[in-house]
Length: 235
Image (tube, rainbow, N blue to C red; front, side):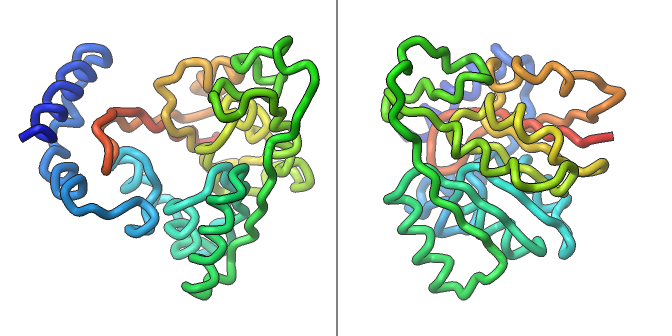
């Protein structure tokens, strides 16, 4: 009963704030998942909205080359469907856990990079909303720069990737850095894009002549929060 009431509470609030009822259809799926005791990693699924997971699966092909910031169930999901995945993770503990999972499943098409944040002296002078400052507003990232983490994409030529997923630290910075590396006809995927500052540093994404936008809103399995995932197809 508590889960049901929480869903209703968040569903009504999300409907009011975002003028949509599309998420209501996922109640049974969400409730079943919430009661299962599983996790996104157990299910080998991205921790995104349900419609976003389905759409991401539809754009993956056996020839797709993917880059992602933020690893987990999404890494296994993409590796199973795509030719190659480069995955960048900032958290050492999580990185060790996922490496073990990749090895146990004999996954051989993932280049997994652990790149933690690095201490900087001028952190307090920087703004996490500025995509040129490389810092996060997360409490666990105080005092750290994620410049090296973000720039992991730099060695790749422009238009290298069919899909780039931004679902880790300093997402606004990653979005700006990712744009040149998305192929024409490829996708830039930004999770939790209801946080406006994630996209404010890349106004070109709102240019319909350059990018085709699709957004998926709704519940996220294993938690009561609602969210939005944005897909930008490069024209």
